[in-house]
Length: 507
Image (tube, rainbow, N blue to C red):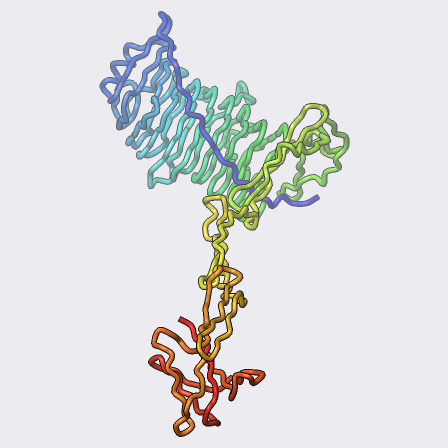
């Protein structure tokens, strides 16, 4: 057996439903926006009628007269529809006083007084509500069931789609309840889709709860505190997915005894260490699927899973916990949505029985799809290759690679040799860009050398490149010699008095 140590944080979504009130002869809608108009509406209303709020409203206490604290509870089976607005109450003796199986639906109740947001004597339903408690007192809370003269009379049929938050001592309290004539009678028949947070105790019990279904009950000390001073057995029936958690204990039994049952796997969580179940009395019976209790600590069954098919759930042969159906899923690759650098993908699976399943594919930060833009390099200018990810929100993944300039690749394409009376030329053409470069070959015959220096006038429009010499034109080869060039004149230090010079120059 292994202790449970995984804390699951469940998101609570209180449904905001539009309540449509009948306008038939059997039900009437009355409206109010302050205490006076509420009293008028209440005095006119009959059982089954709706009293609808039309604006955010602040009152001391919502009761039959508005007097605080002497007003009597609302003892008609009317529906108080907050209509999506916020009702703020400031009374030190509770915010709303409900009896006669009245209901409150659809809006926000903000309580800034003491005691509790709702004093409940007999209530049909509290539904689609957010209850906020803002008070410095330690005895405040969300909903408190009160005796109202007769032990065990206080009762609520349903609390559904309600979120309770704030600084109170409890979310729901069954103060002093327990009926000696009917000791198994629940104080609340159904708590469904309820989230209680930030209170000292999520539910402070001295009487049974018929069913807690699909709810998150948490407290700064305990999720559920059982303080049954009347000595009755407090029974709690957990149905569906529930989570009970507290900083000291998930459930604490300080007096009396308790019987807790669960129809399926339910999380009991102690978030700060210690025992999930504790308290001075600690007299309880836990019948929860998949769990047992050892020394006050809930431990999970080491499940031995057997069976399971497309039509029958697998289950643990030890504790009976039910698991999912066992399907033989095969991926439909034609529907696969690949992940990329920006979004996750999805895979789709089918079973031969008709069941389907989906599975997300994690985002792959390296799965880019590049859009490539190329600027070709030329002989004289560099080029580039730019890479941009096609997914627009993929920021910072663009980059560019440089392509060096290729440089010219000249080859000789034409040549005319100079003579002693006429210049020649050599023409070069670049294989890459067809640029043409021409060198003029100038022949100068029988230069008289003065002091072994020959000055060859070429012309300022030329740029001398090379100077060649041979003593006679009949000599086999030209010999390249050193020369300088400036202002259209090539100057050569010679080693002979006379000869022929050839200058290759370009314009």
